[in-house]
Image (cartoon, rainbow, N blue to C red; front, side, top):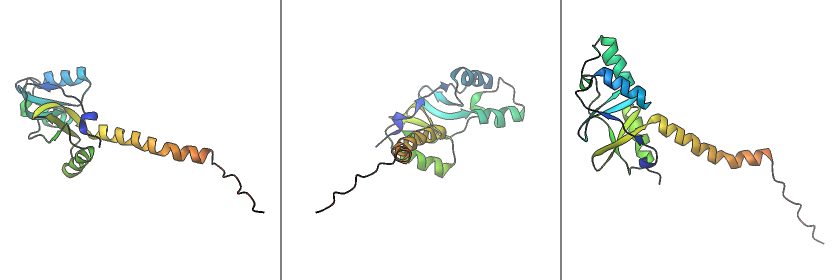
Length: 148
């Protein structure tokens, strides 16, 4: 059975006292849309690009506002050894796009809805390859021998 550890990306974290400007620059340089807010290795919250826009920019907060003032908390987590279908169930039940991946309670990364969709698309491609080959070049059975 496939587990989350195969799909998750390394997590990027930031201290709660850092600023909105700091987190935006870190998102940009890391190429991510979410960052964990960490106190040492304890997961306090998550800040997404959407949080920055809706809770920060849209409310005219100054760029030196602390990141923990716009973070989402508590954070939904999933164990690194959890089966992929557990992530699918969690995404469906809670209408979120990202889950923090933990190992022994320690934050190790993120898995997104996009990650699961891309993985599923790859699995579907693999499953359809034999069907596509058969349709492109149907095999004909040789005629049965005539009994004499």
